[in-house]
Length: 292
Image (cartoon, rainbow, N blue to C red; front, side):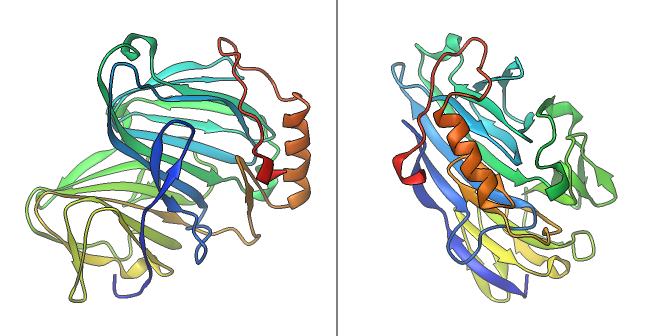
């Protein structure tokens, strides 16, 4: 990755009663391709009285991608979805004109010690699809394309790359790829990617142009075609990116849109309790005062 433009450490953020490491956005970089938000959850060991409880909250103008390494989350939304997500599977919820969802520890785990570790991601929708009808898709772990080359394991979690396509129904040119090296390996994937590209080191180390990078660092390049680096044994990285949109995207609280007016209208709608309800979950996360 000889053209690294940004090197960023994940920063702590609070999502209710759970701390996460925020990878994107940050001041110098608001998006990577269509990806506008990435949180690293955990790894956390939750005691028998500690649970993830993110109550019903709204989204517009984006798709959410939840991918777990460990643990379990129960998802409910205003479409009537009630789905447990486990490691390796993908929850893909497209908000479009508006959806509400909650994320909680499943009932059977709420009085047990448990672990939680994963990624939560927002992908902006193309401008012409910002007001589409909301959708939800769950993709099981065994449906995700996986392959191995020279002792390196690859998984195409979402999008298109390496002449492969994930079954996750994305709406723009993008990719999210897991790469695991069991032994030291040279990774040369120039020509396989496109657009902007980010690389997040979950564990282990990579080397590029004489520099070594480690866990919780994200490397961002504007030219994905020069993606060559060395992975040390036991390293796992996630590569994500794609073609950026021509229009700027605005983010405020849980809302993403190509116009501030659309976001302001969504805020008023949430304050006035005009979004659809989540069956089976009567909670309500108020709009933060600083977002008004």
